[in-house]
Length: 277
Picture 1 (cartoon, helix red, strand yellow):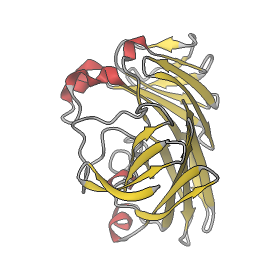
Picture 2: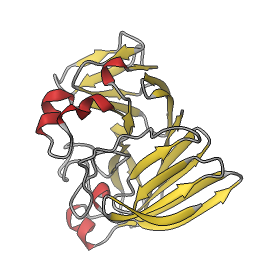
Picture 3: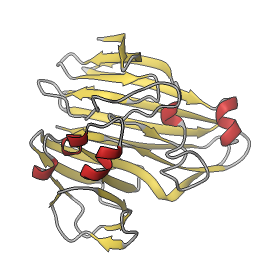
């Protein structure tokens, strides 16, 4: 079943697979704001204070980061894709799997700050305990461009301090809080507050164990992985996040940061992140 709905006061689409798995995606930013596996509970974190609309990024779900990660370039933080209204292209149920497809094209507003012609397509599919999210970028112009991208996945954990993330042993990372380059020496590892790390060329699969349940995380096409939580100090400074909700979430983000993607005219890049409860 697929039908229009609203979420955060904005147009959205609700999808339900025959086995009961369901998801909701905003047209604003193509942000997936809910995913419940079949017979399960909500596995994405969405702040109760989250807002959506022109110029606003949603605090939670899976915002799309494109064409710039963080402030690593001249564009606004995390680029513009998460602030734009996307077009709903297709929703279908095939063989028990429900899919949704949204697209974003360049326009006068995007070209004013990033002078390139492109098409971005976000596709997602769900059934049973699985969710797959695919991001495709096509160069539709006549000049080569480069970009960074990420799926900024906010995962619900129930209690961060009782959560562990495995699958990163030996991985090289940059601690964005200290600026130091380090190597992961514990696996799995736990959390007690703010964390902001970029794992370079990390293994393709991780395992998150938390009071919310186990979650297998995998990716293809994205070289890097970001692990983020604001901790109590930064959470208190964020207007769209309750002070104590840093305990409820962990961002495990498939990302392409270290080696930006270079696309010649007509070329396409495709990458995905998958979850299994």
